[in-house]
Image (tube, rainbow, N blue to C red; front, side, top):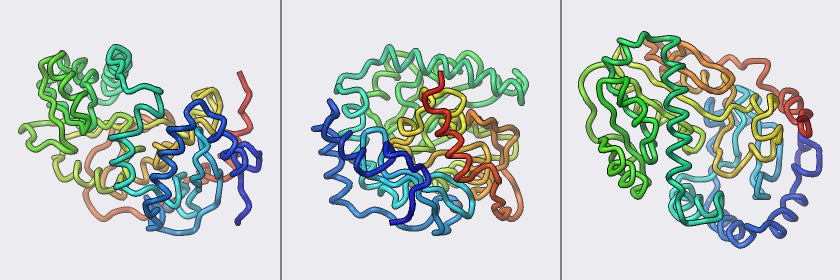
Length: 317
Ligand SMILES: [Zn+2]
């Protein structure tokens, strides 16, 4: 077993076992663990660059799942490796995700919509730093993975049209009834409007088994004047106090990859997309990049030492 870069025992297998058996969620954790142990893990190389040279960071996550977080030594992307398969993720999101995370099958739509409304307002402000209001007003906003559509409901008053899709049929039904907007239960919209478009991926890419494929699919529907807005939870923000400085809480089973601004930008570059702006948030606006896919240059900050630096902030107020 290679040496673990996050050497504190709370990132080790023993702590994971303890966490699994003492957690108030232990029954559900056992079900999910049985599921991934019955299915093949994926070892196709790094999600971004395909290389197989990894450094081991952690051997357990928020819930004590014995999954490995590793950093690719070629491009610097932190990811679960070996990876969970799409077949596992499909069953996990359908049957387990909500109960594991919220301890309930009941969905608190008030909570979801309040969070989505806050995001809608914040994303609109972010877009206004790169695009003018008239440009947004002339655009069709298309959200992939829109849940109950609260972000789109915010954009309805600021864009030409809004539409969204999500595999969560109940959320889509709820949102369509609540807001009267065009929401469909599918992974990708069956049809798209003509004219300038702003695609939104809000806290979606980090959950997708093959992010480059989703990005390529979106790019194929983007023209020269179209934009892709993306937000994922930023790894470096844990050092700034998100997740209460707790890197083990940030590392959790649903996060396939854990992005910095540079690793997200590198992932998008591989899909032929270039940033207008990308923060460590990680929040960014991207456009089509024409020409050959650039070779990946690892940002020196995306290193084992940086992950250790983030971990050293644990316990800060
Ligand atoms: Zn890589």
